Structure formats: C-alpha cells, structure tokens
Image (cartoon, rainbow, N blue to C red):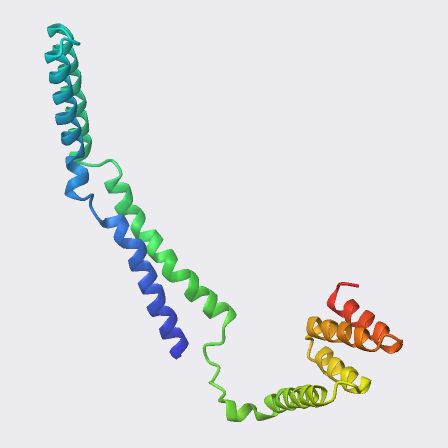
Amino acid sequence: MSLLVAILLLSAGMALLVLLPLVRRAPAGEREAPLVLYRDQLAELDRDHAAGRLTDAARAAAKVELQRRLLQSDKAGACPVSWVPRKALAVPIVALVMAVPLGLYLSLGQPGQKDLPISARAEEIAPLKAAAAAIAEAREALSRDGSQPLAWLRLAGLLLQQEDTQEAVNLLAGARARFPTLAVFPSAQGEALMRAGQG
C-alpha cells in the first residue's frame, strides 16, 4: 500500500509539472515585445529619414505598415489563440499522466501482496552468501600462492557459476600466460568465451 501512495504522489507531482506551463500566461515582457520592436523600427525610420535615405512619402508608408503590424500583433496578444486550446488540453494530459502509472501498477503489480522482510528470505539469500564467500576464499588463496594451477581453475569455475564470465575469461587468459604448457587453460578459456558469447 505504501508503494501505491508513493506512485500517487509522484504522479501528482508529474501532473503539476505538466500542468503549470499549460495554464501559465505569457510574462509581461513577452506581451510587450511587439511594442518594443515597433519603437525600435520607428526610431530606425526616423534616423534613415534624417540621414536622407528615406523620402517623406516612403517614411509615411513605412510608418503606416508598422502601425498595421502593431495593431495585428496587439489583437493577437489580447486573446492568444493558443490560450483556450492549451487550457482544454491540460485536463486530458493530467488525467493521462495520473492514470498510466496507476493502471500499470494495478495491472502488473500486486497491491495486496504483503512485504517480505529480509529475515524471512534467509533461505534465498544463503546460497548467494555462500557463493560470495567461496569466491572471496578462492581469491585469497590465489593471491597467497599463484603457482598452483588448480587455484586458478577453482576461481574461474566459481566465477562462471555466478555468470561473471568476463572476469573468468580474463583470469584464464592470465593463467594461460603463466602456464603456457598446460592444455587445460586454453580449453577452459574457450568454454568461458563461449558462455560469454565471444567464442
């Protein structure tokens, strides 16, 4: 049940993150951008006219065109076209963000399953602990005396049992270099390479 509550809280947070940009109005700076652009363009027209690059008629025509564009942008900004669709879109998006994880949990999860503490899973954990202890013991024996081929083979075999094939391959490659006359290491390395999918 605690997992269900966590999923609901996370879904609500995600819905809020999705919802905020959809319902937030444009900042005042964005709404005033066309007016600032109009002023800059008008000032540029005045400079060009003063410098003699524009005639009176061309300046007047350009000014009328700028005013027309400003009026169009003002009408569009007074009631943004995207505002109503964005608000209408917010509800289904939030519902989807909330419903998908909850639906997946209810269909794939097991809400009624009770928690199983570690102490109750001692039988499952015991073989893993024993394998880890055996690997640690084999590593220690190999580090103490690396001249025994059996120590190399034992550690490689334990690693292969735990599906740590890449380390077993590397270990057997080292054993082949150390004992070049023993045929057991090339065959063992070949087997490890096959299990690792590299053979």
